[in-house]
Length: 442
Ligand SMILES: C[C@H]1O[C@@H](n2cnc3c(N)ncnc32)[C@H](O)[C@@H]1O
Ligand SMILES: [Zn+2]
Image (cartoon, rainbow, N blue to C red; front, side, top):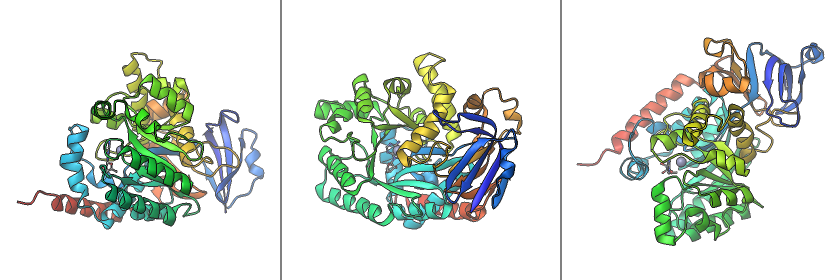
């Protein structure tokens, strides 16, 4: 199995290597990138491959990584809007989720995979329920998923034991499956929905199993105030007391991090925590503006996430990249904050670092996860700077081809891995039936 892509404008995101190659070729053998180089002297002509893709008029780049989502929530897209986080969760989302079935999460996840394929996302970190179903959807769709079960125990030890057992089963059943495309994490939901000792126990379980942890942290000012009132310190320091942020053995992924102090940022930088920045969700729920430029300046690895489809309301990382850049600029009142190239790095290199170290950069030896972005379009004319184009002008729908783990999932806008009409029909049925079941009983 080999695929040769030629005549592409390659954005490798390889800082120490090739950088950008204006007329490049890339060879994939099995699931790995085996060669990448300049094709202006037709070097690729001497290479034979099973499949040849002419990428003239397209940017070839690493696939994007969405490091925080709740994939099954595609079914709740537009189900409850224009509310604050706590009221939104308590009065709308959690009551609806109490009615979820395995089938709902399967079709919701498959729909999510389809949307990600169509908008350039090759890998994602998830935290939700019925995770076997999300794993099956990932297996079918061909993308890369790092799956955690969203554990919520509200200080109830018995519930906590059950939640840990469910997450543990996910790890046992799915870690490394689908040729390594599926990995797992432990997902204690948040410091205000899980107690400190439970979150500490989930960290110990993750270290024992050699997988990462994924948590929401300091998403709202209400969380910060609640933690200060109840524990005399913020969530970050409260969890530092159980060594939650130590990344010596396993990766630690912290979503949102809107209300981080300078001290919290310093601690994350020292510990090597990866932050998932979710600017659209933070704006929609009016959670605030995360200090991303400060984090990057301090050396924190920041990646990008969409959050679930009920607070975004899509999975389009191109929108997320643009919003991230614009929000930092207005938040710091400095147009030089979070420049385009740094944003592309967040969506590729930094996301790849937490999901699979062999992704996020196009170089020989890395896994073959990549996309072609069409630039033969009105909104892509002219392209002076490729990073500026990707962040400020490109759309998710400009992604024309996707390859993950050496397999073509979408070619020239045609999705090859699932019946799109059927998936949308099933997901719609599940969504409306779920909403019906979730209606308050009279
Ligand atoms: C895994 C759990 O996280 C919830 N969830 C979805 N979006 C957010 C958010 N922005 N903050 C906190 N929790 C969230 C899901 O609705 C589910 O209950
Ligand atoms: Zn979330």
